[in-house]
Length: 282
Ligand SMILES: Nc1nc2c(ncn2[C@@H]2O[C@H](COP(=O)(O)OP(=O)(O)OP(=O)(O)O)[C@@H](O)[C@H]2O)c(=O)[nH]1
Image (tube, rainbow, N blue to C red; front, side, top):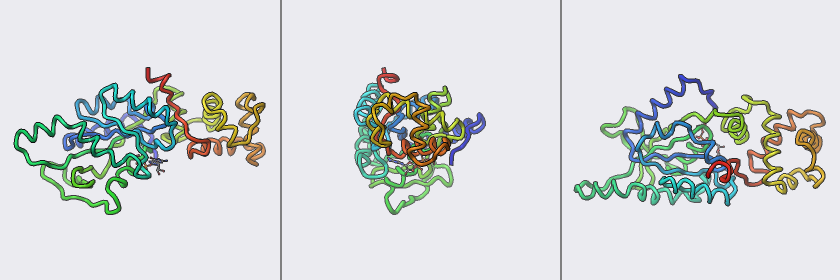
């Protein structure tokens, strides 16, 4: 489900997250590895304030590994905990607990000095739609998805799921809205499925995707659609027409556009990162 975000929805989402925040020690901010910046909520600092945060660069299996490395450095230089993961398998997710403890070292030490009993760390998962929040929760909670008891001081009806014995997660993630700052960000979000592509022209998104691959990953594009070096020199709308025909859609460019968007989104053109560190990260 993709929600269309109106000011009322945003205010409500912000309020709901603020209510939940008081019950957790740390927030897991999930971003899409293909757009580590464009998939962040624009008001997150304001929403989270001083709450410790671990940035989880999800869908790292779909992203360009060299770019992911640079983005990891970018976030850690900002003093944030960071980890690249793939929520669909265990790659990286077993590192979440040690990283969480690392981010909370000071707080946990203080509690120990005060003589407080060791306790499970409480966390919530937060992010824009489609970044993989539910997938991660299911992965961490395991098959059982065991719900722990309601605890005092916690909103009634609030449920926790346990990961090992040291971590408890709110069973409902915090959903925040994506950036709507400019056309470029909109196209990046649409291309990866974070916002409804119907909000933008399909062929605009497909052409944006083709332009991007022509610039950064031309070989991956050529391989997928069996394009020659000459084909790659075509103006992009003509290239889209050629691909449409090659896919057997004749002159149905909507179908051709949908196919291109789908292929890019599903990783059929290989791994890629839309937010280039050199553009945004400096
Ligand atoms: N390749 C890959 N796909 C993933 C990963 N994590 C999630 N997905 C896929 O991404 C899509 C969205 O995942 P969800 O877990 O539903 O995302 P969500 O953030 O809970 O989405 P909303 O409910 O819309 O807020 C699903 O098709 C998942 O299978 C990942 O690490 N790698």
